[in-house]
Amino acid sequence: MKKINVMVVDDSAVVRQVVTALLNKAPDIQVLHAVADPILAMERMKTVWPDVIVLDVEMPRMDGITFLRKIMAERPTPVVICSTLTAKAAKTTMEALAAGAVSIITKPKLELKQFLNDSSDELVAAVRAAAVANVRRLAGRAAAPLQPVAKLTADAILPAADGRAMTQTTERVVAIGTSTGGTQALEVVLTSLPRVSPGIVIVQHMPEKFTAAFAERLNSVCEIMVKEAQTGDRVSPGRALIAPGGKHMLLRRNGAQYFVEVMDGPLVNRHRPSVDVLFRSVAKCAGANALGVIMTGMGDDGAAGMLEMRNAGAYTVAQDEASCVVYGMPKEAVKRGGVERTVALEQIGREIVQQLNHF
Image 1 (cartoon, rainbow, N blue to C red):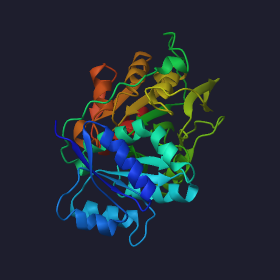
Image 2 (image 1 turned 45 degrees about the vertical axis):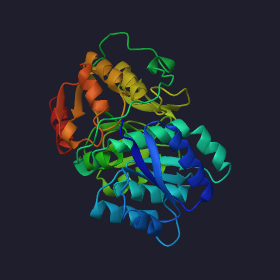
Image 3 (image 1 turned 180 degrees about the vertical axis):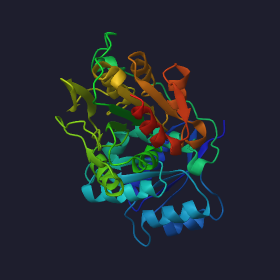
């Protein structure tokens, strides 16, 4: 089996040492080089180019975003951002994701070595997902098998819908789930929507402290309002609510109106927030009043919930393979029969508007 060749770029010697050791333990990954800054990285890359780069953002001589943009212009390569859990770093990391990074691994300022050891599964999974990412829609190679990890379903948070059809109302809800590559995909979809659009609830797999900065960035470029969700927030026209990192988000209903509940709970499908949890709650509370969208991402989170939504009468859409960074979640949703229509990323916004006009 061909190994995934990784380069680690971080000015912290501890990070370089620990990340290298953790990645090299995986049978399908090897670290080619671990260097202190982008200038050294570019020297190493003259002789051998990595499959995946694990990149810090704040570094001397050249910052990570400048380096990332240079890579994407010269030779698009999957990049996993390894960033500190701070509000300032979160906003900078959003710039990195917008510039083409695939995903985020967080690191605290204190007890760094212990944190990275505790997060080894997440780190390895992020590198594997990056290795198969269709960066700028280039073909990726087959995914390496993940190590088996205990995996809970949405049953850990709420029971399934009882099968009774929901009363149709004038209030519509769009539920969107995405993961790897989703930050860029969501920007494409949400910026295409007019100010008068149905209420939207979103799960994007992302660490805590980063979703607020992500929502702020989207809010600055969209006609609709975008914010990180809080318990009690109304799902109303012209507004999109993004589940906070590290929390599950559920749709609730009070009469003809919808609102969200943000809550703790175990990982579902190895994620918190989980798309399956959101989709199940939408199936229970909105039924045929909802439209479900599943987009780029590795794994199968959301596939079971999308089938529940479809069975409850919702219209369901998946992003097509050609426009996905990783065609994992949509593929599994299609495979299970939860998807009515598959469309390219650039068509999803129009599909939302057209379908809701037919209600």
